[in-house]
Image (cartoon, rainbow, N blue to C red; front, side, top):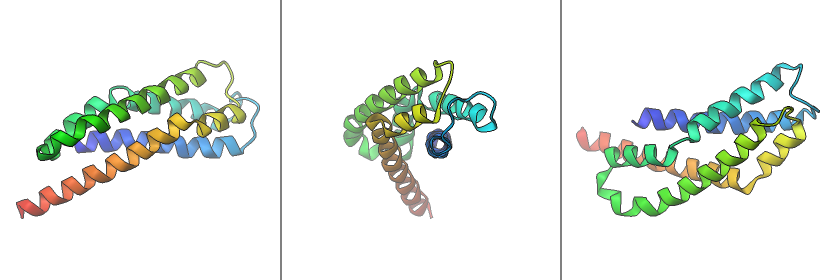
Length: 139
């Protein structure tokens, strides 16, 4: 389960990194360029990764460290809210007939997306730490 969560986190992080580069290109549209095609692909993968993210994280964390279940629900509520808010923004952008660099720059600046990224970094580190401790305890 940890691997699946890591893959979701990676898709979200890669999308954000690509969007930073795309925003810097100053493109008026996503039509007619390789990066224009890619921006939709990265956004689509991130949207897929965001769907059900909090539930998947809950399962992974319970499998990796059930002793911390009492601290988990409050953070997962935050993650779920941030994921839903970011998902709404990404879906709005994907629904546009044309995706300019300016539109992506505005998405990058969204507090919802930034909060989500912080959640992902924090939770990723917690999961990695739990996994390291569990492996050490087995040795």
